[in-house]
Length: 220
Image (cartoon, rainbow, N blue to C red; front, side, top):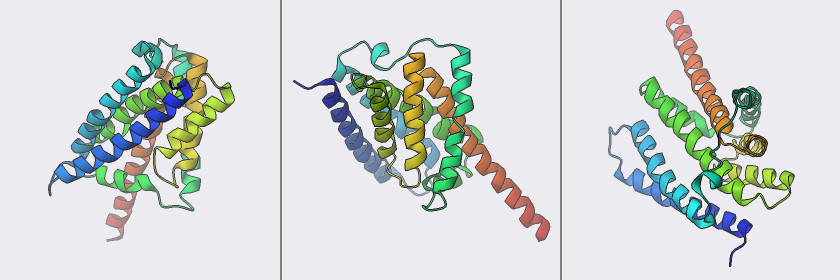
């Protein structure tokens, strides 16, 4: 018999294994000239859906309960969005010491439509990562003290990104969003904040690229 906490750690191991195997499968199927943004979007859906299904079945509760899919107020959504940009400052700080793992992805996205980039880098991660980490994972940690549950949720979220550069800000937003779920009883505010965070990074990168292009054009 597995305790609720043990089930949470088992679920995280399953998540890592699925991530690794599905990632290899997608890379092996890609050919020269393939639409990598579209492939990434499809991969995320194919990867996250069965993982979420396993998580719900593992805990044996109603899906809405395990995933914290409850109604929330507009005020909670706005508050979550307002406090999330602090993570961008932490990301910029860590970039001083480690290569920015997201830079390559953002650079690749420049070759594709804005809509596809937003879908792949902002919408899908915001929805599915919140369901996985603030839904399944945090639900499994709720038998701990609140502070420990939030910190453990943040740590698991940070480790899932496999990046030293992002570990500080993913730990921060992971911990913060766990508290947001506790406070609001819903993953929806976290989804909105997560989307805003990723979308701001996409927009800042595109704005910087546009400025750089304009400067280079004026020089030449």
